[in-house]
Image 1 (tube, helix red, strand yellow):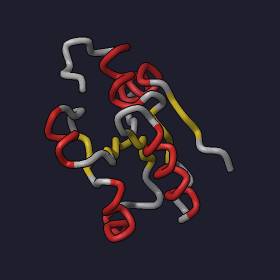
Image 2 (tube, rainbow, N blue to C red):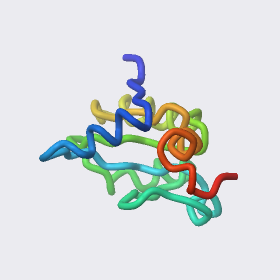
Image 3 (cartoon, helix red, strand yellow):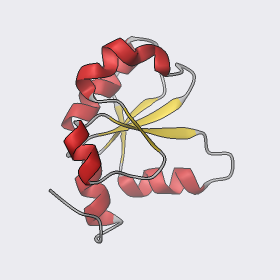
Image 4 (cartoon, helix red, strand yellow):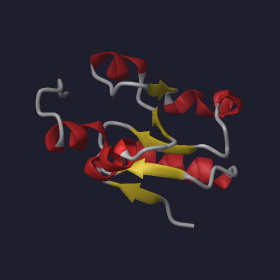
Length: 108
């Protein structure tokens, strides 16, 4: 099954709907997360995900993000292969979020 991707604007619109039950999962390295991250984001670096998989709920909708969307696409596919059918990639990553929605955010 191909990985579903949403733009930052689509994610923001989904988040604003009453009863929205999606969680943001940031898979960047700690130094990247410390530099800039979105509020209420669960941070599990990509290289720790396999060991920490039990921290995630397979029934939850996760929007996975990284810097530009490549690592998050891989992680979303990894999660889907393990029964997380609602794993979604944030197209363009946090860079696209900053560019499209929050130009005041620090960029790197």
